[in-house]
Length: 282
Image (cartoon, rainbow, N blue to C red; front, side, top):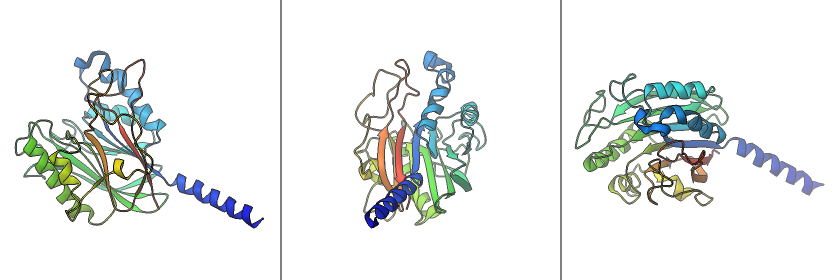
């Protein structure tokens, strides 16, 4: 009888722990442009929303989202709200690097956006050899289940400027240190950089006092799905190296990590695969 009771207690504990798991996604949803023809946003928006909902994502860092796409996703994700602004004016103009969050699980405490430039508080600013304006949106949440606080940062690095990507990585780490301190941090984004490139090496440099770790390396289960994350609306991923990442620091154990490559009659939801991770929150 004692053995059965112990087993039941263990099963209850495991079930409650699983309910506390936090599901995180980073998703470059590709901007809304008619030039994409049958891959244009009006044909994809339900697919994007369905991936977020099916995987029960509590946090979704989106990149390349224009304001009308933000509105569409808000309508398709009824229990979600978002934190973020357009990069061109700090309001609604230009692409967002926003954070969607499930309000049933998370309560937003505060949020801001800064620019990846030598004037990070100036909307629309850019520096170094960046081709276009780039931003980081961050938010602090309290987890309604565990009562723990956490920070989420979401970004999209420049696609041209090599120096801009390196300097963006340095600025991002400094901002994470200044804003979050030693609190738990999740960092999502399209970094336009492969794992062995300088920007990712800067972010994950273990000799730095504040560094982030790729959740793929921490996952208890082996990575699931393609290793490359950019498909260009082709029949498969372009190569085997990812450019989209979920990083983490302090307070989380990573249970699973995946690149999601579902198709609908041979078409993807975006020209990037969403990257997905499940965290155990103690």
